[in-house]
Length: 198
Image (cartoon, rainbow, N blue to C red; front, side, top):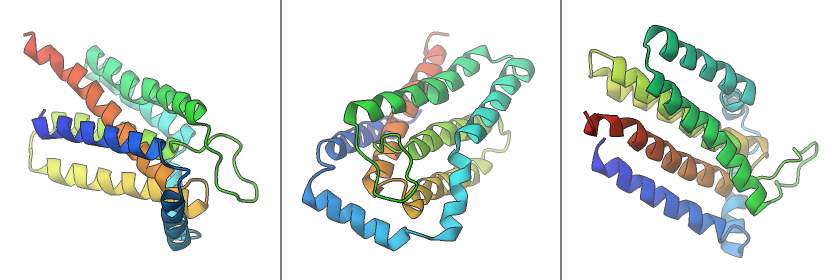
């Protein structure tokens, strides 16, 4: 892995900490309100929330695990996916209870905590893991850019869908993306550490 990705993971962790310590300040509240007024009710963006739903992520992760175990015999890869997606989801639930931020006021609002956005965090961890594995298997490396490009657009839309639905504040989503990326890089560093010991 290029050093720049690890540096970026440090930056995203710092971003997460800054947001976590300031999400109840007037400036942040104004920022959240501005983004909400811009995106709320956008039906096109809302469609993409389905890609971050628990049922979809679980089903897609199981398929990924079966493929790694049965066809690739990559059992370290199985652990890699379980760490990024499984443990990463547990991390999201832990953070929600630590910060206990209420969700935006909305009729029929969800009852769970708001910070950080689970959809945003899990979409980063799942889709980047998927892209990492796909590009690892691709023979033609020219497709790497396309693969990551598509994945990043999907991650962006899944996160924005939560603002458009009124389920999360914008800072919940940014924090979810940030800590999701940091955790993903930690897992990649573990996964790639085997190469250094060969």
